[in-house]
Image 1 (cartoon, helix red, strand yellow):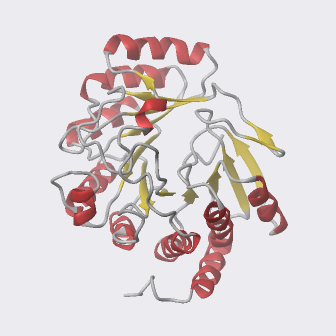
Image 2 (image 1 turned 90 degrees about the vertical axis):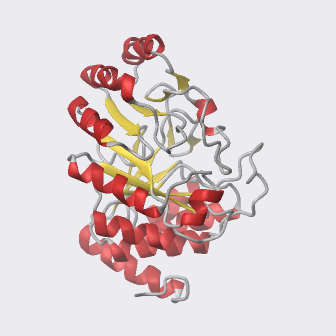
Length: 319
């Protein structure tokens, strides 16, 4: 088994880039979903094209150390069937083309989607692209989402039991996350696992084990995001994850899964390390980057990449 922490980073990047050039066109999708303002010399997004809904409002039973429900605060509240129905009507009227349905977790690590499954199907019937974040999905939810015709199912994969306990405050194990991913595959859902680099208080801990789980269970795409210290959370002052650590995870992902599309997602800390991790992502040969710096786009262009822009999640590689 390879020791991803100790191998030469330049050699890992070189090997990963060579594989990317074999299996993928030299094209980079710049993703700028409209829940966040994105305005660089190359592109400016619109504020209605892609929306996010929370089926729990700002409530989460876990209150994870890295999030503390702060991520939920920027989502449209759809915590009752009446509010969800309003979204079904208003999102297409306001020009939305896609939506991410998410929410806080119950104490078993699942997002409570049960009573919204028929409305999720109605939302999909409006012609929107529909992504759903499930948490630890249950069989009945997987069946319901498949019947609703959702486009993608997103879930974090964690490869360390202590991280699950200490950060997520959850009495589960890595095997539960493996089973959740396997369940999505069993029901024929388009699975897009996410890995949070530095989730254990900024340190690399279970990331490479999570990659191994994904490579063994299978998925359609992989999104890598990076721990970002959010004000008001226990991790607000955690040191920024290094660009080198992100590069090692991205390179390992490409080398373990040569044909799986990779994205560096929207959660990235600001500052010099963001610049470094985005450049490394280009070097590895990711298929999409969310909200990149203007200089990252210039860097990719100089390396010969054709750049495309869109305003949906980075896991959506078309449209």
